[in-house]
Image 1 (cartoon, protein in one colour):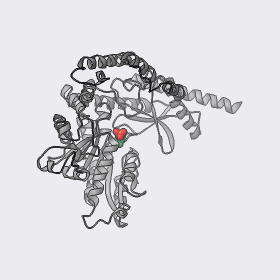
Image 2 (image 1 turned 135 degrees about the vertical axis):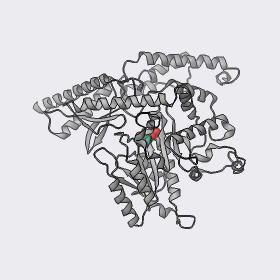
Image 3 (image 1 turned 45 degrees about the horizontal axis):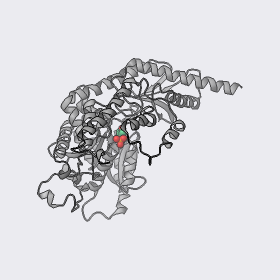
Image 4 (image 1 turned 120 degrees about the horizontal axis):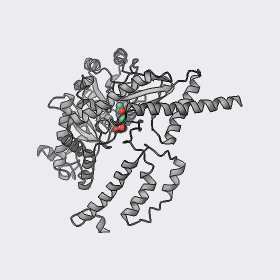
Length: 489
Ligand SMILES: *Cc1c(COP(=O)(O)O)cnc(C)c1O
């Protein structure tokens, strides 16, 4: 069994085994002609059920053959140009190389004595991102598992900073008075974070958006004023820079102004929009982000990085102390005075992957402009796709895209019942998924069911978009035709 351990004596086995796996994946990627096979849970579950985990195969080739059956054959492939559903990007090769290196060396980024150079590389990438944001030298941050964790940590810091001082805080009862302001289309992790942070059920105030799905600052001002008037504490405003559904960007400078006026922590959730930090064409869309107290960036969304790769950034690094705890065995207090850099002092996690290496390899290979160019291409594609949809009488499209999402709905002229149109759109999405020809997402707008493209693949073309719209129309028409038949018979 020791021959399976990766060490000095098994280097050759390591090389052979990993190469075998890479060959399989490479062959798979080269021959995948659809993003999905359309397999259903009922068909796939028994395949996995059948595997007896207590009877190993003892042979890499056999395990890889089995993997084809249980996973590779029916996986959902984000690299395929007709995968248009969620915020998943195709990944860049230098990052995949980074992934292979980081898991083989397996550094843990909690302490210097488990990572050495890894800690310094992560810190340099945090500094680099902070510079792009426009933060000053006091800024800091840490890599996280994803945007949800970044938002949670940012709001933890905001909660601690909202405390009026060592004596003015009476404990958990005061948590019920804290309020977070976020737009009605902000990410649900804001509400989840409020719950995890022990805030009250009314903690998150939903601020209405305008026709472009951007937070209405007049409404925000009104809510902040009301909060203050009622003796409540405005703990944080979460501005979203790239909403998950619409890619809309809240008016950051106006929100920053209001946060300054009310002494409120400003958090910018740029999980999706962070790709603009490296865009030559669209960086100005993020103007005002430099006034935030904290920022969430998901490199695994718009920097073409494999999951997971994310960070929480703060304008004032000292605020990270709210996440600092010392353990004698790991990061004793004396190490702070000895100036030993232990990233666990800044993180919610303890043992932590060296995800930063993927971004490092990417920047060292392609450069920031290379990444930004890819993101610009998908934003350009969204603009073209929007024009296509706007000119297509079969479709109703909402909000001209700022980033790379399109939200639309099939609206046949002959059908006037909106509930029937809802059902046709829901059906079309499901039927498309089951066909495996393309994968699209869905969401609700003003209570009605819409479909969504999240364009993150520069290989997707306008022709792909047009073809998928035809497929959707076909499925929807089939549904409507059959339901007319049902009513008639
Ligand atoms: C995706 C997303 C998140 C959550 O990020 P994860 O990496 O999925 O945890 C948070 N906010 C926004 C705006 C997002 O789009």
